Length: 62
Image 1 (tube, rainbow, N blue to C red):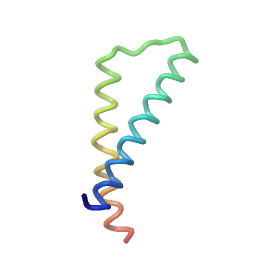
Image 2 (spheres, one colour):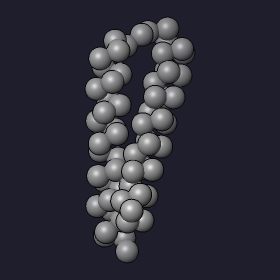
Image 3 (cartoon, rainbow, N blue to C red):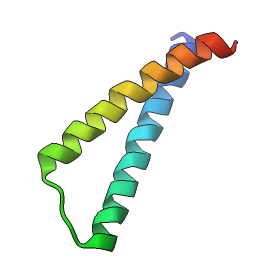
Image 4 (cartoon, rainbow, N blue to C red):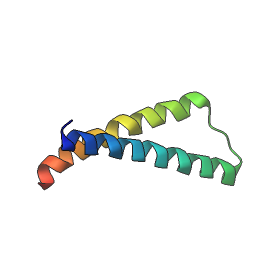
């Protein structure tokens, strides 16, 4: 696998996990629960957006 693609996918995983941890912390702090569909939808947006942005930014930064 190309190192640039591998790096982008790993940043996507890190982004999704960080988002879900922050969301869980927010829910515990405010005692407000988001529906599962909202959580999954937002995690998908982060999971697709983070690798794409990382891949594009890596091309410009090199």
